[in-house]
Image (cartoon, rainbow, N blue to C red; front, side, top):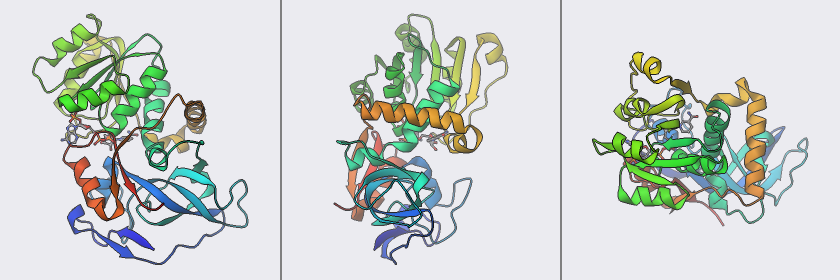
Length: 326
Ligand SMILES: NC(=O)c1ccc[n+]([C@@H]2O[C@H](COP(=O)([O-])OP(=O)(O)OC[C@H]3O[C@@H](n4cnc5c(N)ncnc54)[C@H](OP(=O)(O)O)[C@@H]3O)[C@@H](O)[C@H]2O)c1
């Protein structure tokens, strides 16, 4: 089968598509004919060996996928060849087939496209865990989403609206702000402008942000915290801008605000009940048609490098998806 194979940690230009052996299922596992895989920010770091944990070489990048089951181990129940599933694994999704445990997948709702299925898991789990469980976002509160046209950002807009918040989307270009508005943001802000906090003040009627969803980091994070409402919650999701900001400790005191870390990768181990609650709510929204995962740009497998580059050059709108089979 064809797969993207990282033989040495290197920039994506130096990574190739190879013919490798078809993986076989072991106990508890199933094999999926992958039809779409999505690329996240972390995948770009892993390919270059710059992520906090390194995948052993050689490996196939890509953590999220959707496809059709083609083989099931004898001891697996509830799944059968031909079922449409979506899921996540540590790696291996940028390939024609992937083998995972049954716990790594769920059945796709009817009508959901393979591309949307591949764009679902990480961003929406992160957004609802952050906003619902960690940030305790309540209906009527004002939510500021930084990096609002990115993968997690646009998920946070949709989830924020479903939770009944008023959503203010901050993004760097007119195209990105229009994209964010098209998924329900009530107001948009250009946070590259030096006076963007004034625009935020206007957009919140002088109140400030009750909850800040922050996948960006850098100086903009500190500026955002300066505009937090009393009892506001600033959710630390990621550092797409590359810099880890340092928050002066007088700010939480003066503003009455709270800084809260969010790590979706740790939920299953540390808060299994929260993971169950979040996935149940997301599945209900998907099945009711209230939530459709946002697909940004779709690339052919041969063009997988372009998918990475679009994300790495700050040019992505939503999640980058690679179409693999039919
Ligand atoms: N904590 C968790 O559980 C969790 C889960 C998923 C992802 N993450 C992390 O969250 C971060 C964002 O992930 P994502 O999937 O939303 O990424 P993304 O789709 O690439 O979006 C990131 C956004 O950050 C903004 N940005 C500002 N400076 C940037 C720069 N120098 N390069 C790239 N983007 C820049 C961009 O918006 P503007 O151009 O509008 O500024 C961009 O849309 C990453 O650090 C990722 O590892 C964390």
